[in-house]
Structures are given as C-alpha cells and as structure tokens.
Image (cartoon, rainbow, N blue to C red; front, side, top):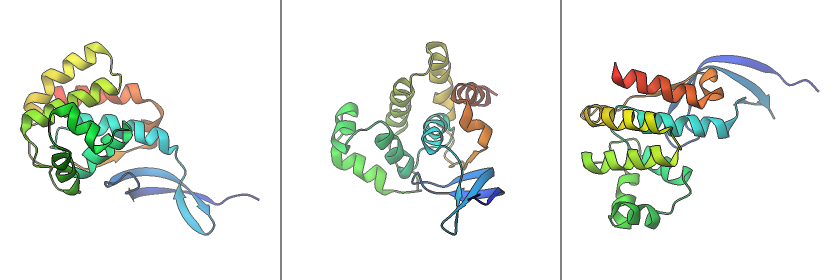
Length: 166
C-alpha cells in the first residue's frame, strides 16, 4: 500500500515543547492524519544546538527541553548550577515566556549545554566569546528549521556561530 505524501511549505511543530517552524516539510498521511516525515531524533539534536546558540534569551520550554535532552532530573540540573530544584522548576514553568534567570546563570547554562553537545574546542571558544554580548538581547527568536538542517548537525553549528559573529 502506497502512502500519500506531500510537502508543506510552513508547519508549526510543537512536539518538542516549544514552537518550531518547519519549512518545506515532507509530510506523510498515517491513519488519516498528516504527520511530518522527518527523523525526530535528528530534529532533537539540531534543536539542542539551535536553542543553545540562539541569541535570544531562553524561555522555560527551552530549558525543559535541554534538561530532558541531556537526561537530567530537576535535582541534577539544580545541583549542577548550585540552585534549588524549585528554581529550575520555576524557570521551566514559564513555558514560552523568558525564564527570568540571570545573565550569568543563562551563560553558564548555555556553556554547559555546548560542552554536553560535544562541540569542537575551537567552536566552543568562539561561542564563549560570542554568547556574552548576544545574551544582552531580550527578545525571543522563533526557531525555523529546513529539512536540510536536520541532516548535518556540524554544518548547523558552524552556520549559527557565523551568524552570531556577524
């Protein structure tokens, strides 16, 4: 039996806990429902890098996504940053609003994420220099992902670092 497929030019996907605009997304019809025909584990990998390198401040859903992506409990993340479990829960409860965590804590959280994502050392040093001024911006930027981005995570990291330095 052949499945129906199509390309959707703009899809708002919220399966990771925060809105992601998928552009030119391949879709497949399963049991009468149109679903994205993408590798969701690769999408998670891409979004972990995107969220970490996004120049806008983190929202609660992004903090929760990264915590779960790294397989950490609220308590483990709290201990990593010397805060209480309740503080981490408070950040996450903000949902799609800014967490309210301090700039230093957010910078530390992002560097922790970059290290856990196994970013190459020279890219890590460059990111460390760039994240300071980038975090001064207070607006949230939407995540827009093209199918090609999901295929090559390393290229995405390089592109995001170049965008931050521009």
